Amino acid sequence: MDTRVTELLGIEYPIIQGGMACVAEYHLAAAVSQAGGLGVISAAGLFADALRKQIRQMRRQTRKPFGVHIMLADSNAEEIARVVVEEGIKIVITDSGNPVNYMRLWKAAGIKVIPTISSVGLAKMMEQMGAEAVVAEGMESGGHIGMTTTMTLIPQVSDALKIPVIAAGGIGDGRGGAAALVLGADGIQMKTRFSVAAEAVVPPDYKERIIKAKDIDSVVTGTSHGHPLRQLGNRMAREYLRMEAEGTYWQEIERAVTDAIWKAAREGDVINGTIVAGQAAGIITKEAACAEIIQEIMQEIEQLLNR
Image 1: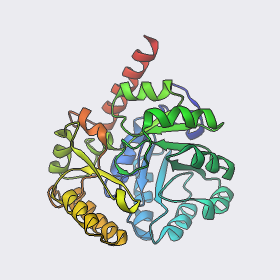
Image 2: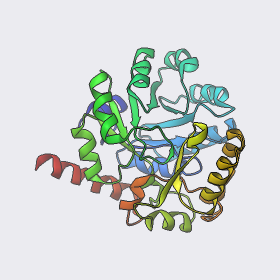
Image 3: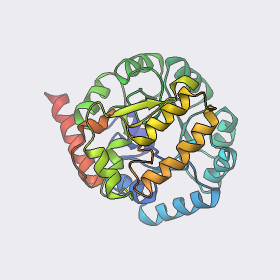
Image 4: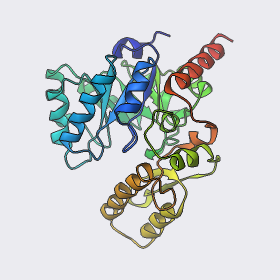
């Protein structure tokens, strides 16, 4: 399937694996790229040397295109912004901030910059700044979210921009992918679906919790201090809500989130850790290899669009 996204990124299928702290590392990203999508290494929470190692390991696994996801709110974002230039990365997806301070640096290095946005206004701003595409992410997504649903966000952003739009949030199978394309997107990004891929290096309990999740199992914390975060409900999520109710500073809660994400995704503690997952968890029923995931989704998309 050829779209503006496949042409822009040099990939076979218009499927991007989203950046996920502690989950989107080179094993997963390489498998997605090898299967024809765009694998993405998440720099969230990584020191510069750790990111360099991930990038170099990735290049040993595949020669296909891949990208790096950068959380601009991270304290070392400036250092990470330089690392991707020094390591010759050609695709950067940004999140949680405005990439304006790094656009000149990245453009000079020939990097395609794809910011994540949650509103039409932000999307227009990114296009004016020179972004090659945007990830329009609805509130169904896991992690930090905006307040507009994917169903309503995608057509409005698509109508407003000339650059390609990548839909994200609540997409976990070919039905969601087909719907996104019909709404005007040029490609889709998935995080939760790939977090339970066979190649995702996370504990079995982590994957099992996502696979067993029901439609009502995700909760949103952080709304009161303007940093909403979607995750699966557990003891840790209830603790965040308690901290919010007591007026705890959002910086303290964010630090707790960072530690708890590691505890869940690396140590397998699905009770006291934070399981970052979107509402698409409710339609995910099995672990599968990245190639199988992508092929199933593309076959379903093509069947639905041709019907």
